[in-house]
Length: 129
Image 1: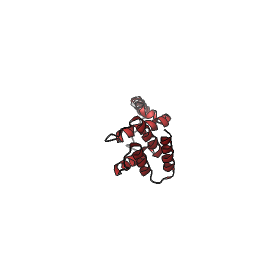
Image 2: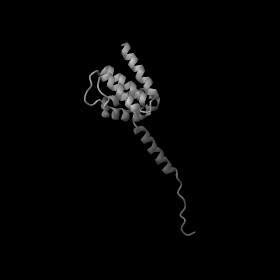
Image 3: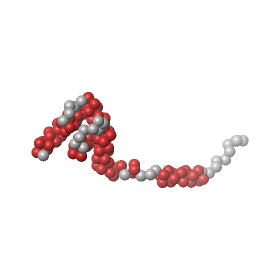
Image 4: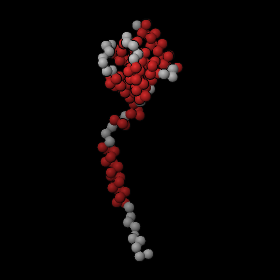
């Protein structure tokens, strides 16, 4: 386990100072799964970074390697789901409302619109002035 800890710390430190986080994460991914950091892995990492940020992706890769030690053909959906859960957990206060049904909100807005429509006074016709 000591070697894994050193690997985690090594890539985390590398990730903090790089201008190419997709490449660092692809190499990190490759080291965990004993594969080369291919162009498709770099693209996958860059897509995830664009949505979730480099550190969320870093820890999602770590979680995935611990839970899914065998590399499957298309890891993107799984990695995306792990990133999404991590992000939602970290930002639960701001994402709670996005999971609520909007039906109640829409019904309230419709009631307000009807009330506003009824409360408007009809202006006198301007003809004949």
